[in-house]
Image (cartoon, rainbow over all chains, first blue to last red; front, side):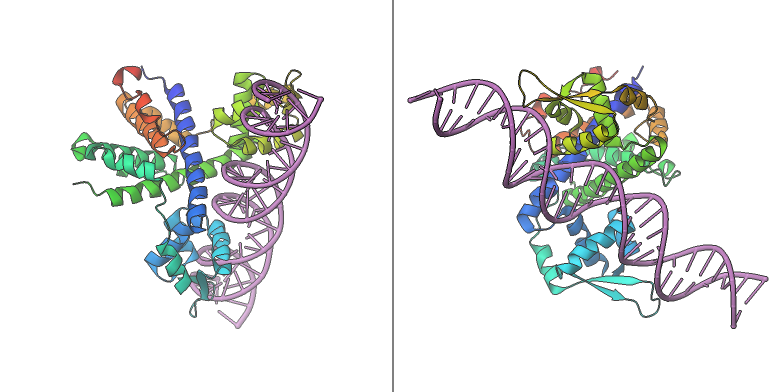
Length: 162
Length: 162
DNA sequence: TGAGAAATGTTACAGCTCAAAGTATAGGTG
DNA sequence: CACCTATACTTTGAGCTGTAACATTTCTCA
């Protein structure tokens, strides 16, 4: 008989450790290149999507619109990003990388700690898949916005893993 | 052949979604009981450990000492917690729940979203185990402080979980 | 056409989070 | 005792994060 309350407590503990590790890694990355992880994620998102609205960035990096706005403020202050208001619909603001923005992106280190990358790489393929699918499963289960998303996923079926 | 870079990117994306979901859940909890998740975790930690030092709380909830101090400040302002300086060693501060603190703890909702709890409960035992061990694995791999911690853990053995 | 609803983004605010610097105390060694 | 180091905690500063309230613009439909 599974001890769910205990498991749920353990889930909480591990999540906290993961969140903390992420914060610590962000500090390390700042020391290495002067940008935080969220800043880099926003920059990369702009690089990948081209001129892009705040809303799209926000979806792409899983941050609220307000958070993206404040991050963009800082990036704009530092001339890594320009805001361009759309002609057609003046509500819309498009973010665009400056040349400095493109340059600085080249200097950014990996966003996951080297230790993580090494250990993840050293896992067997099926282990990587398992970790990834568990992570995805947790992300979906925690996502209270999309209440119906869960049934769609079926990565955990044993067949998919071999 | 596993596509590690892609997997690592996916790891990052899922982690961000999980962190965001945690933030959103904290806001929901605040509305329900007036306390944030970190505040509740600190209160619970004190409840569980009795009079306890800042350092021990910090270890127990995976937050830096500085963060725990600021959380304690707020909890003390609201009379949920008292600080008591130790007689023997005056550097040490022990945190203690007040009676209001004990009361408020009884009103706190679960820290994981109900949707998560339901879905987690509905998983097969082995699936819960797999999710949990993946989570633990990730937490360990991300923990750059304890470089040697990984080999110690053996929670993955099936016996421990059934 | 004109009022209200909807969409896009920003601002205000409160709280979380860390590292680094600072304060106070304790312990050890000459 | 005097100094030096280590420990426990707090303060400071900067950034992240969300919600709610706001301004602006666009859309809808009567």
